[in-house]
Length: 394
Image 1 (cartoon, rainbow, N blue to C red):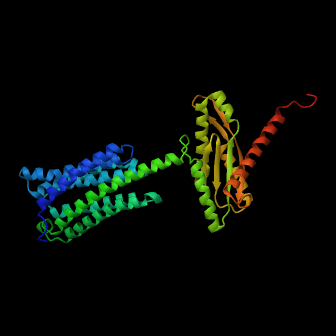
Image 2: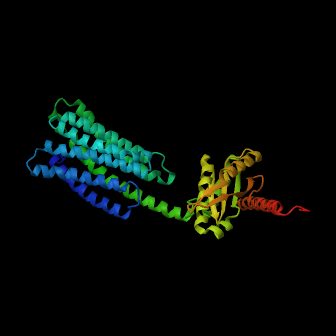
Image 3: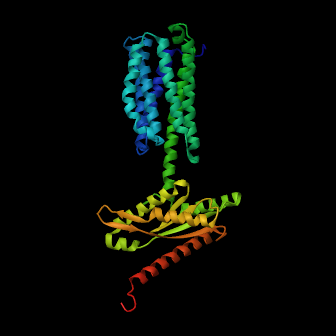
């Protein structure tokens, strides 16, 4: 290990890398403020930067290297706590809402632990490294868990650097557990290796964050092109792509599926009498009820105006499709109380077409469902017209 720089020099190198990383993180944060979790990652980078800056400052003030490490270890644990919170926020994990309260307890505990064990290097390393491995491992798990296919590669790169640092910290923890006294762990050659691994982690993690922000920006651009701005449902373009994929899936599995066209009854009167804000509120509520129906994995889209479409997967028979249509009708139909205090009765006309019984081309399937939907709408109008007409001799 003669090629290895001494620890004091390595600490200065790591400190310089941390300062540059802080500048890069600040730039990423300013450009991508809307990305959830990035604010916590920025705070994590700032804490790490201060922790490493404290080492040369403490040495310059006449402190021993061991004393300078006390501040560094406390800052390191707080850094990893903030990093984990950023990962939870970034991935939208439910625990993100509760973790800040835990930070209020864990951060002072980390500082207190470093102070209490300042004279016992072996014990301090054991505590610091065990907690660090736990926080790094949890962060990697959060980043890689349930990633969408388009996100998977970027999240795995981030997880790789987190686990790499966790492995390095776990190695030092083992060495600390085996160390017979404090000098043996403080002067162990692996300490220099750990500093180099730390530089690799800082650079790699920052690069991973920039990739994740870029990927999210690309996803937002694609979402704008494939989602309806009012209801956040997939739009016609996304529906066409999904229908083509469903047909391709049928060719492999021969599992039938159904397509339901849905159109609101009396929607024009809502716009004319209550205003377009009321009409938008109705469309948003219909979209919400359709999502509630589709929790089992069915696909819902808004084609435009008051027209929606639902793809029902894995239909075993026509009667199964008709039962699904009835459940859909019960889910969507019903009153809606508007913010203005008015009430609107939401009612839909539905038309079901099954693949391949009703069509063998995607466009023909849409037409078949559309015709049946308009046939139902015409029947409802006729029935209401008869109900309003006076009886003979009345």
